[in-house]
Image 1 (cartoon, helix red, strand yellow):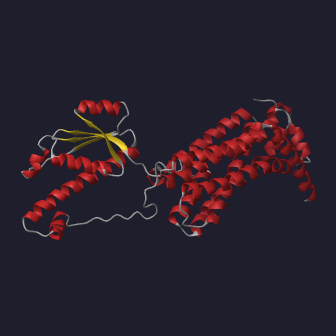
Image 2 (image 1 turned 90 degrees about the horizontal axis):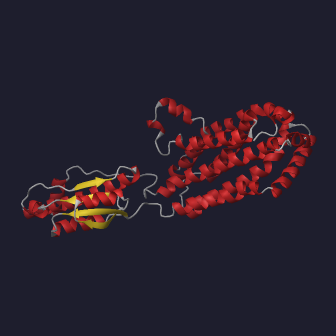
Image 3 (image 1 turned 90 degrees about the vertical axis):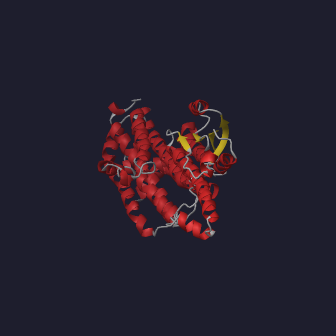
Length: 392
């Protein structure tokens, strides 16, 4: 044990000197992660989409048409930025990307309402952005429904009904919606704990692959192994300790930004969140080590590591829910530690779930730490055989 610690310390001193001499190390493990965290904190600073520009074509120009236009403009999401004179103008503005929806109020709008004749309001929403489509459609529909309800209540009260009776006749069944875990519908609360760990994951993979792969590229792998007393475990531990320590500090900084700057609520256990984050870093370091051992090529390992990292977000269920995926795709999602980390974040931050429900996620991530270590004999071999050295 004493010899192992001595060998690990020797590699650690060697690696610390190498880090101080190579700007790429410092950039990957300190500068770029902090920049990416700050970027996403600023990106989601508002949290909720507000004042999305739309256009209104008021073909009636009556007091009631102006009233419904004002009600649409008063919604949180929609901003009536243009009052257009034709649908052709609205189409042009939408193609130019200046507006995201066009609302058409037809001729004789007020006349039809006063004569108790059914009329309509048309809404044309771009389908290019699903989020914008949902937000605008919901708020515009709410505004028009509220306006229509107000008209109906006025008509019913004129017939002698009380306002309460009129409301009961207008809406005999009332629907109440309760948003349990994110009542503000704040995208910052939902996406910050997803995008920031994704950036931490990418830099973990890149830094780990670079740290090991550069020994092969520069033909110093045998020297690195000899410094560790020809023990691949001691050599790997000494090499990755400074990188792991720096990434742990970045993980803590990320959590501080998530909770203190973005303001994401913590309804569950911070200890579980912290443990999941640290295990998340270790799992991707272990996978990165395996990639270098299998590929024996820095450039190829970096390419595969980058591709594997990017795919993790796709299969995490954050954009398209896992329960709605084709079953083989749900199985495939389990091949990424990011899936389990996001489960822990959602459970502990938003839902406030008991810690016991996050323990299986920790267990699965632990497998990603242990199983890739089976490639260590292969890593020792490529460190000792010159045919694997000097590859780009």
